[in-house]
Image (tube, one colour):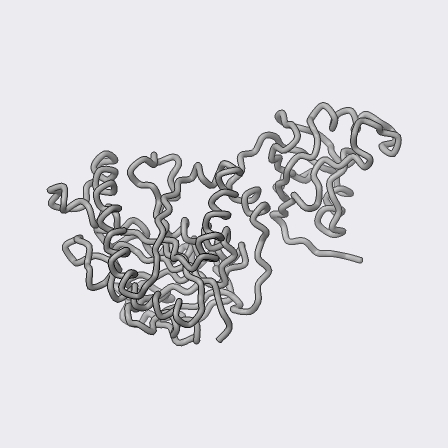
Amino acid sequence: MSRQRLVVKIGSSSLTTKHGALSMEKVTEFVKAIAQLKKDGHEVIVISSGAVAAGFKALGYPSRPVTIAGKQAAAAVGQAMLMQAYIEQFGIHQLTPAQLLLTRQDFSDETRYGNAYSTLTELLKRGAIPIINENDSTSIEELTFGDNDMLSALVSGLIHANTLCIMTDVNGLYDDNPQTNPNAKKIHYLPYITDELLALAGEPTSKVGTGGMKSKVSAAQTALTLGVNVFIGKGVQQDTFIDILEGKGNGTYIGSFQHETVMPTTKQWIALHSKISASLMIDKGAEQALLNRGKSLLPVGIVSVKGQFTTGDVIEVVNENGTLIGKGKANMTLEECNHFRGLQDTTKATIKHKQPVVIHRNEWVPYIKETMKR
């Protein structure tokens, strides 16, 4: 088996007792399974839920708190308990865990996004096991990932993982709700996520977690767009992840499971995390150049501009029908763009661009499938 880089997402329900407390037995089993992966030469990043679930009992809450302050307080206590458990158990296997707490702001800010990538890369290079969770103690609702399922998908793309394993208490996806339909059939393999499957997936059923199957399917869809294959299922045995890599996992495999082209980190930031400064409408010729001929966007193809932008800002591009076709980084200011648009012959332009390019090909992310024509 070739060496792989895996992101393993472990949900709250997979780490806690039926009463909501942290289960050391479950933590121990997951650590054994991850240690086996490391022993076999694979790289592992863990996205671990469970901080709120682990902490609320220690603060005297009878059940998972529902207020923001209660959840954040429980997370502050529970995150320490969770990491202490990981430190103790990984230490038995002479492995070093490393904690990273992330928020949406760490992804939306390009510098911090690059720093997260550099830190994770260095940790993997040093043989450590990054354990990532959202910073629940300080996050506000508008800036959260929603749940750790989406966080795991974004991290798997950021770190260019081969496979994302979303571990839950359900053994995969079904063609109907197995809790209400005893004839529901398990889906063992899907090449991609359909709209029908997204609509079918259910909401959370666990009292100690936030993400239901719908969030896992949505996260899988995001991971696939980033070139990462996905497994959704269950298992806490020592060979669980080895079995998953060998195609014997107890769950559903999603993707081609061939060598995928991973979207470059810089383009991931543009596509998923950046803020839009302006919108450009382009003509049919520019649209064909972008989508069919692999070209950059030139000022001559711009029909109109909404908003303001300067060099380095992210701008969206729509066609003459108003359909969003992609996003990219501005290679010039709005003033320069308007100057070039006003020239009859752009080859005579002399500002500071030998070839006036509004969005360079290397910083362009299409939202419509490109069809290259020679």
